[in-house]
Length: 397
Ligand code: PMP
Ligand code: GLU
Image (cartoon, rainbow, N blue to C red; front, top):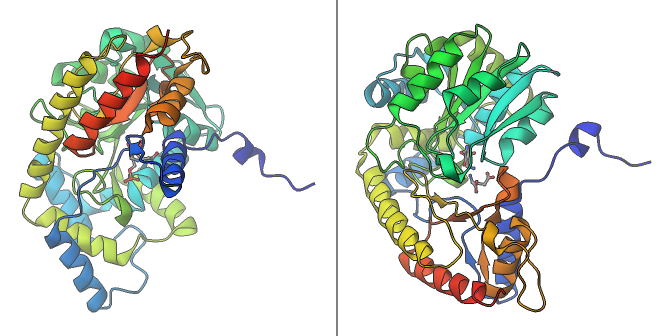
């Protein structure tokens, strides 16, 4: 009988991409949907980066690139890590791949054995538990709800560690909550981690530059942490380059070598053209990054203000990324006469069908009391979406 592998049968599809797909289908039918489901900057890739991509095509960058990336790109990443993060890496400790997503998945596949436990604070980015399952590992979820600003404490972490724990996955600034761990909070976590010899941290820093509280801190910066931290980052969010599919990992050389072996067998080096564009991103003028960050901050203020005006919403103030993750459990059990809202997925579906605003239910992120809105869209769209949401939620009794 035709059947997919057990590995794939264990895997859930990406809820963020599924919701975005649904919103595109409705748009194709002529419905005016505002898409706040997928998290991607609405800005276009800055001109000087596009130009470098075009030049790469003209200059015949059309052959296989080295599996870990062009040396010039790795050098640019090494320089970025030194300048922005005060971290000293060698070129052999950096590997470039097909988006931040591949970096995260490669790291998990390179380190996690079947039976290993991987601690994932919830709310989490949808793909983490699925990638751990793909590797045969066991996701161990620690809940950090609305009341604790969606951040785990050092005590919670300590309690979750067992002899089987291989890895902690940290994402700061966070998708889906926008929470950012302070330097002090990271230091407390680092103290716990460094007590456990075989514990690694996958530090997903893809939202590094979209930060509203000042300087980004990486857990790799603390005493004894660089040897056990795998930084996953990329150009998708900071430089509005989601479609170019370019991300990277900085980690101890033995891990990078492992990832290189894996990548050599199933994707090879990422697009040569994208790599040339990424060199321009890292070595060029950084003003574009700050301009986009400022726009996101203004939109954060706007959406927080409007969300606080919606009865039934409980709203945290995100300190980074471009997501709002309000608590909406007060709507559960309510109905507009035809549709009853029983959970966060029903809630997101109701908003899509009635308000024509695409969002994602919190279930997919491990927090069934909340839902996620991406505010990487225009001020006009944010205002219109919040208006439609407010109007349609008022019908629920
Ligand atoms: N990590 C997080 C937390 C993300 O939100 C994303 C965006 N999809 C990624 C990694 C992957 O980024 P990329 O688009 O570069 O694959
Ligand atoms: N990071 C984005 C999101 O969470 C992109 C979608 C994805 O890769 O899952 O919406």
